Length: 367
Figure 1: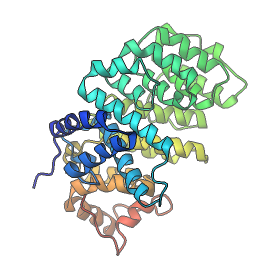
Figure 2 (figure 1 turned 45 degrees about the vertical axis):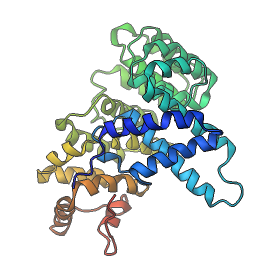
Figure 3 (figure 1 turned 90 degrees about the vertical axis):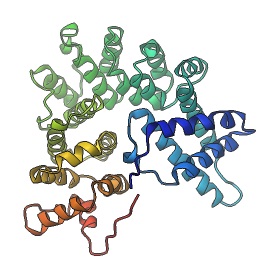
Figure 4 (figure 1 turned 60 degrees about the vertical axis):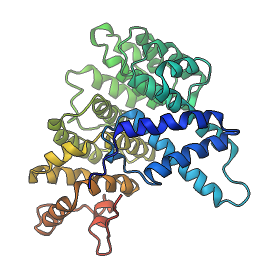
């Protein structure tokens, strides 16, 4: 049976929710409108890869509804306190953002000018290429430190000369290293319009190594080995940004190999591992099940995909299971045969996820 969730169905659901949400007597009641509407139509657990189209906006909205469902379910289990007020405020504002957007993009733009930026807005502005809001993103970078990384990631996709000075100031001044690396990536795309790399030298040797690395030709190739925390993050984010522009079928093998290679060179740092996991989450949501099925008809690519899964931490179990469920039993059997024949070896020190998939007590969950 075809369990595809067509985008049109999701559009119809959000259209029906708009007025009841806006007219709800309280923010919690408004969130309950979302809760009831989504769970009644799609259930409590949605395999996002079943969507006929999975873009950043749909993904962001469904991830938000997942949080709403979780908080309301948990609220019923937390005695008299229920859902915390600050959580309600945050979820309400974000839900309102998406419902405005789905209703009418002009309504979204109108309301954005009257409220504070939230974590979803930089993604929306990037996705719809709303360059009129570049000044807003720049000003909010200074006003809302928690949104700085998301704002910088979104601004990578705009080709506006006003961003050269913005990126330069961040790379040059005393910001967190991660922000300075993102600013350097932003400057790199301006090529001949920015050549003053020597002015960015700092007292941070690791960052200086990255600056020299960027100045060399062909430093965008993802096969480069990380030599430092800064080069690792630069390479990781370069891979992530390339997937955000779209993936062709032919690019999957290189993507899997590149992620495996960079993981093997990862510095032993908790903050670096956190950034790797965040980038991996972003990349996983861009995988096309249709393309993956086509690719995995070739056993060589099955091995490449398994090698990639070998580095995926067990925290991503649910997300990977969404993919494997749609790949079906044939893929699991191919996986088992490769392991039994010795053609593929699970690195148990790295991947408890693959080990768990082959454990005797493992039972697949249909989602």
